[in-house]
Length: 442
Image 1 (spheres, rainbow, N blue to C red):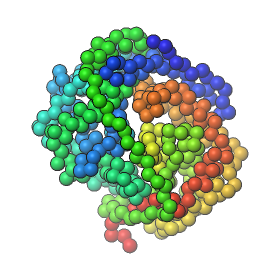
Image 2: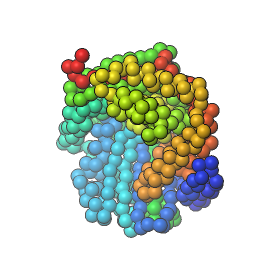
Image 3: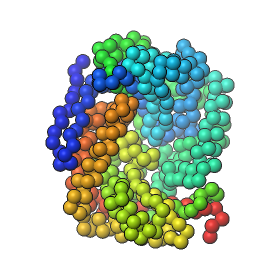
Image 4: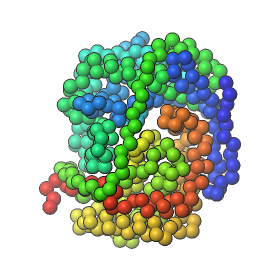
């Protein structure tokens, strides 16, 4: 089983690229496996990423991908409800799962001597999940309560990740509420759940990653033992979700009964994330504009004008630039007092973006930004679970787990001219603007 290791090289930021071992193999049923051994700490992380997310939901079944994530914890082929938790936590580990735009993941961190426990548990629910009417009804109620807590009864709940996509996009896949409507959730049937599992939870639609204090040969033996006899099934062909660019500004207003002050979110569509050479300048641009006290919008709006209370920017609806396919937006989110009008906020953002597009970056600005991004990225990779998740998403999205080592170098290759050109694409005539006002305000 060959190992791929990226060699560290000097970079303009002065930070070396990581060189984590990356090994891979596949089973006859289509399961892709990535192993990254690291004996520096007696800990192992196991992650399974299924190529199904919020964009995979059919009309009339909003929130189903997230609902199914909950169902995957309700029992499996050999285990009853809560036993997955019992075995992981009883081994001294932690576990969780999450639903994203283009994938759903499940993961455990355990002492390395319990690695086989996690592998068995994930194989057991990949083989079969306990789909009963009782479990379905119970988890519909759990998800509905989660929506009440996180969206309906929280200030700025769902802003802007739920409320902005319908303004920015046209297709159902890109624009619908991934948390789901109560009507759609209550309409879900056991047949829907069984069909969803058969279609999307096949071994060939998954990536299994094991990182940490493990022997790759032992992991391969255990994976073949626990996953090898899971029947392979046809996997769905993922459609293109790309949409034509906007040719005019789109604006909308939402009222929030709990918000204490107004806010506004602006979004522009970025190039396809599959082409990192054209996409990464937009990721760097978001940081140049909003990350840190010296960032363009932070310095102008917070430090000098003192016209807003917070400003942030990021690429990706859920705030992670590299965990989604095309289309993916660049978002600037601003919270401001009543006395600052939305038009003033937009005018200031336009002025700073235009200044960057016209004059370019100042000396050292790009280097500082990339150094900060790289340092944050390396910190996120340091915990074994952070590394397992990054390896998983790179393999699942791009079939390139090795990007875990290559990304800092790719960021280092982004030029000031490319960031300046990206700024030139953030125009009023190709953006979506979502204004939030406290309910009852004028």
